Structures are given as structure tokens and as C-alpha cells.
Image (tube, rainbow, N blue to C red; front, side, top):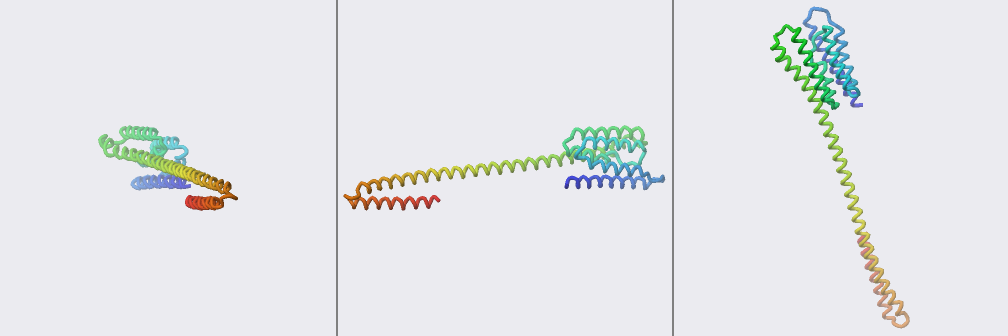
Length: 238
């Protein structure tokens, strides 16, 4: 499905980006490449295949995996980069508190270790480096939340459109029913009046047979005229 394809592309992109960062980092180092770092890069990508079904475990494992990565003294890949996709996924699935909490824990723990172990001045660590990590974490969460909000708005708009169409259809059916009832009433009134007139003149003709032929002829003429008029009205209605 399209969702699985998207997840596969995201997983591959994360693994490729992390592998590229590892390669670039190791390029300026004299010691031999560390294959375990690439294993972690592949793992950070592969775990994203479960991001829809298990967003919380994926987020937790990504954070713990990042801590384990640095505990093993592997090449630097940044604090936020390994968990950006997991933070995005959690926010996209509606787990905003989990995403914010995981991002805060990730940043805080990493900053404490950097302050303890990094020889660079604390001002640098709390300046550009910290702002960059916060920006990446916040951007991932905001993007995930934005995608979810857009999806919810689209679903609501589709539901509103569907309900509006159903309401329009019901109103059209009511109008048709009302028109049919109006035509039925007019037809009933027209036919009833015509039959009453025809019945009246037929009675006159019946009473006049044998002693007033002129009255009979006149009554039958009225019957014929009334029948023709009624048929004309019925054709108009139809």
C-alpha cells in the first residue's frame, strides 16, 4: 500500500542520511572505520517500518538506541538526527506529549553529557549547538503535528461535504414528494369535479330519454365537452 511505501522510503532515507554522516565523520579520523556504527544507522531506519503500528516503542527505542550509540563511543551523528523521524512519527500519530517529552529527555541528557565530557566552552554548547538541536527537535514535532492537523481537517471537510450532499439529497426527495402530493391533489380535484359534472348531465340525459330529445342531446353534448376538457387537463398534468 501507499502507507507502507512511504514508511519504506522514510526508513531508507534515515539509514542513508545517518550512514552518510558517519562516513563524513570518519573521513577525518585516522582510526579504522567502525562497522557497528552503520549497523546502528540501519537499525534507526528499519525500526521506522513499525512507526504506524507501534509509535511509542519506536520512539523509546530510538532514544535508547541513540544513548547506546554514544555509550559505545561511535562516530558523532548529532543528538537530534537519529530521533527526528521517530519524533515526527509520534506527533503525526497524535502522541504530542510523548514526542515533546522524548525530545526534552533527549536534549537534556545529551546536553548534560556534553557539558561533562566536551572540552569546548559551555557557552558554545549552550549556544549554537543547543539551538540547532532544539530547532531540529521542534521542527520534527511541529511538522508531524501539522501533518496530523491537515489530515484531520481534510477528513472533517470530507465528512461535512458528505453530510451536505446527503442533506441536499433528502431535501430534493422532500421537494419531489411534495410536488407529487400537489399533483395528486390537483388530479383528484380535477377528476372529481369532471366526474360530478358528467354524472349530473348523464342523469339529465337519462331522465329526458323518450320525451325530450333536445334535452338529451344537450346533456350528451355537455358530457362530451366536459370529458374532452378533463382529458386536456389530464394531459397537461402528465
